[in-house]
Image 1 (tube, helix red, strand yellow):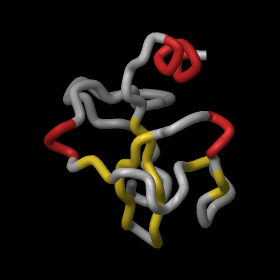
Image 2: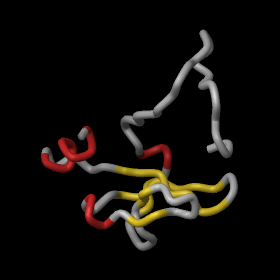
Image 3: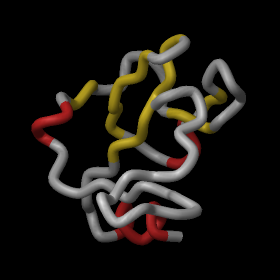
Length: 80
């Protein structure tokens, strides 16, 4: 819902795209209809969408089950 609302407001939405083990890039989402499964089956922006360098991302929403007092996330999956 947050992504839908952001797109409706004209905000640029950037999603991670897994390229291989331990490798990913951030790509601009054109529309929810353009999503394709990545190598793990997770909906992702297709190749060819604009790549955004990490330093240009203003806000990141990171899911997590638990965090410690140093803001380290419990469980990092494949290390992404």
